[in-house]
Image (cartoon, rainbow, N blue to C red; front, side, top):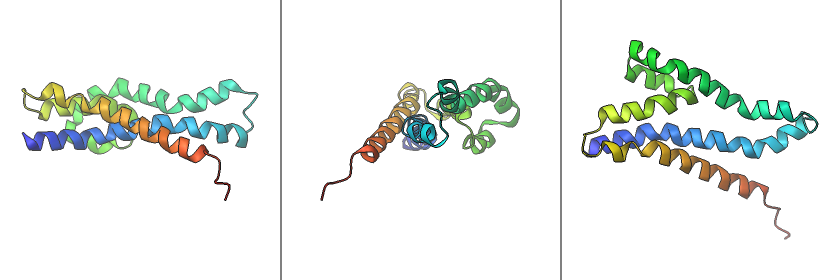
Length: 135
């Protein structure tokens, strides 16, 4: 049972990175707007923010059938390249490798680690936007 928990935690790290990625764009939008002069173009700014999620939506549509053909383990290697695959395949992988008595608890890990990634990212953004020390 300990091995299943370790496998689930390891697989859920991709959701931590996804949460980090999704929240990091908040801090970068300020600089992107200034650098590329997007203050008067809110549609372009919105498109820049949505690109990661648009790509995730498109790849999520195809991740199930592709993982059925190729297999779950090889797809976990590809998983590092795309947010959409992580969202779809990690819970499936955890449920396939977990014992029935703790399967539900372990399948909460992807959501928990994703939220944790967002929290860490927001903390980093907050720390970076603090004014410099007056000394």
